[in-house]
Length: 81
Image (tube, rainbow, N blue to C red; front, side, top):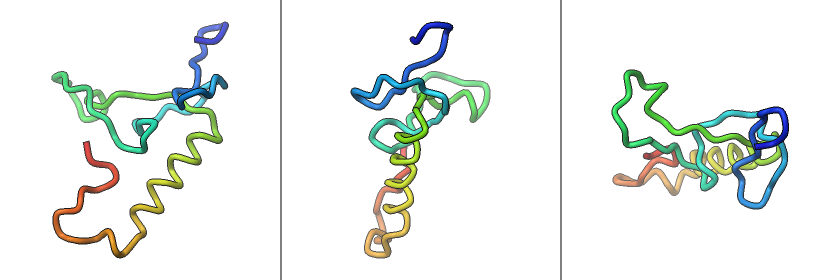
Protein backbone atom coordinates (compact mmCIF):
# COMPACT_ATOMS: atom_id res chain seq x y z
CA UNK A 1 0.00 0.00 0.00
CA UNK A 2 1.14 3.51 -0.73
CA UNK A 3 0.90 6.26 1.88
CA UNK A 4 -2.66 7.47 2.41
CA UNK A 5 -4.25 4.05 1.82
CA UNK A 6 -3.80 3.98 -1.96
CA UNK A 7 -3.18 0.62 -3.60
CA UNK A 8 -0.06 -0.27 -5.56
CA UNK A 9 -0.35 -1.58 -9.14
CA UNK A 10 -0.60 -5.40 -9.07
CA UNK A 11 1.45 -5.75 -12.28
CA UNK A 12 4.66 -7.57 -11.31
CA UNK A 13 7.47 -5.14 -10.58
CA UNK A 14 5.46 -1.96 -11.16
CA UNK A 15 5.10 -0.05 -7.87
CA UNK A 16 3.05 2.83 -9.33
CA UNK A 17 -0.26 3.81 -7.74
CA UNK A 18 -3.01 1.39 -8.80
CA UNK A 19 -5.83 3.79 -9.62
CA UNK A 20 -7.88 1.36 -11.77
CA UNK A 21 -9.74 -1.53 -10.14
CA UNK A 22 -10.09 -4.53 -12.46
CA UNK A 23 -11.00 -8.22 -12.38
CA UNK A 24 -8.27 -9.02 -14.92
CA UNK A 25 -5.33 -10.88 -13.40
CA UNK A 26 -1.81 -9.79 -14.31
CA UNK A 27 -1.95 -12.63 -16.89
CA UNK A 28 -5.05 -11.10 -18.52
CA UNK A 29 -7.75 -13.49 -17.25
CA UNK A 30 -10.77 -13.00 -15.00
CA UNK A 31 -10.14 -14.62 -11.63
CA UNK A 32 -12.79 -16.01 -9.29
CA UNK A 33 -12.21 -16.07 -5.53
CA UNK A 34 -13.51 -19.61 -5.16
CA UNK A 35 -15.57 -18.53 -2.16
CA UNK A 36 -19.34 -18.36 -2.01
CA UNK A 37 -20.52 -14.88 -2.91
CA UNK A 38 -23.90 -13.20 -2.77
CA UNK A 39 -23.63 -11.63 -6.20
CA UNK A 40 -21.71 -11.91 -9.47
CA UNK A 41 -19.85 -8.72 -8.56
CA UNK A 42 -18.55 -10.23 -5.30
CA UNK A 43 -17.50 -13.51 -6.93
CA UNK A 44 -14.34 -12.16 -8.57
CA UNK A 45 -11.05 -11.09 -7.11
CA UNK A 46 -10.16 -7.46 -7.73
CA UNK A 47 -6.77 -6.13 -8.83
CA UNK A 48 -5.42 -2.58 -8.93
CA UNK A 49 -3.45 -1.28 -11.92
CA UNK A 50 -1.84 1.94 -13.05
CA UNK A 51 -3.29 3.28 -16.30
CA UNK A 52 -0.43 1.98 -18.48
CA UNK A 53 -0.58 -1.61 -17.25
CA UNK A 54 -4.39 -1.73 -17.38
CA UNK A 55 -4.26 -0.56 -21.00
CA UNK A 56 -1.60 -3.18 -21.78
CA UNK A 57 -3.70 -6.00 -20.26
CA UNK A 58 -6.86 -4.87 -22.05
CA UNK A 59 -4.95 -4.68 -25.33
CA UNK A 60 -3.84 -8.29 -24.85
CA UNK A 61 -7.41 -9.43 -24.17
CA UNK A 62 -8.75 -7.66 -27.27
CA UNK A 63 -6.00 -9.01 -29.49
CA UNK A 64 -6.86 -12.59 -28.42
CA UNK A 65 -10.59 -12.00 -28.89
CA UNK A 66 -10.12 -10.63 -32.40
CA UNK A 67 -7.92 -13.44 -33.77
CA UNK A 68 -10.17 -15.49 -36.11
CA UNK A 69 -7.83 -18.51 -35.96
CA UNK A 70 -8.55 -18.76 -32.19
CA UNK A 71 -12.28 -19.33 -32.72
CA UNK A 72 -12.04 -23.13 -32.88
CA UNK A 73 -14.49 -25.28 -31.00
CA UNK A 74 -13.28 -26.03 -27.49
CA UNK A 75 -11.01 -22.98 -27.33
CA UNK A 76 -11.04 -21.34 -23.90
CA UNK A 77 -12.15 -17.71 -23.94
CA UNK A 78 -9.54 -15.14 -22.85
CA UNK A 79 -11.79 -14.20 -19.93
CA UNK A 80 -12.22 -17.79 -18.73
CA UNK A 81 -12.00 -18.45 -15.04
